[in-house]
Length: 387
Image (tube, rainbow, N blue to C red):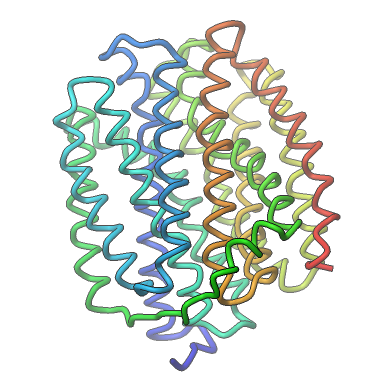
């Protein structure tokens, strides 16, 4: 197929539609965070048990990205994305029926799995639709959908809670996903790759940079979604703020993330990719540590700065993946790294922070996480493929 060489007309509209799909994918995955205090109170569970929902979300996501990485290129990226959107719509309709906490685990797993099918399909799709010189900008613009989702989700939840109980939020999401699946079916063109050789998976897992980037992604994901997931609990249960105020602070703290994500997309086309990645991670490390030690009156400012900074890592990381792996390996490599980083970064990290909150304080866990982010940032300079 002929690739788009600019961002005008149909090229821009298609990219914006992909952006919206990523936005709602990320939103439905993260909506558990702003309503977690309500769920915790309704089901009478501990911080750790409530936070363990994110383990099931992440485990499902990890399985989804692996499955998508293995098979989406063969069956077609369009079919994979339509299937993912339809599955999310179905499970979102079912979540309001859950009156047992274990059912929430099951539904969270399926939501994570369905969202996981999307990314390994859309990144190769973008690299097929747009010329290589525009990959950085296209991927960065698309990735701001996640940043916007993180920003908007608590505000959307707060708004919808004025009209529905927390269960009704998922019905709204279900309707939106149903519409998007139908629209995408008609406006997109199928893209497939040739069947990768049988040694592809074996070859990929032997690549040193795969695991170096996996570690970078784990701690960046932990500093982003890991912290995001427990912030409402941290603010309401430990700092004694109201849930409305906590979700407002959580949403506002993400205002700068969209701008930073786009800016990084343009910076990586002009500056050394590794240096930009290191700078983002080391500054994030400092801000995460500060989040664990500053007084309550400064927490909003630190949250804003930290959330804005850490978001810049992900468009950089996705471009690094695209440049490190060839066309046949790209989807699977993306799937492996996203799987590992989501299990540990956005699944186990909030669970460990929840345990820290139960046994001592959220502050201690957040501070330790910040230190590890700083240590991990030094691995950037061992990514030889990006020299």
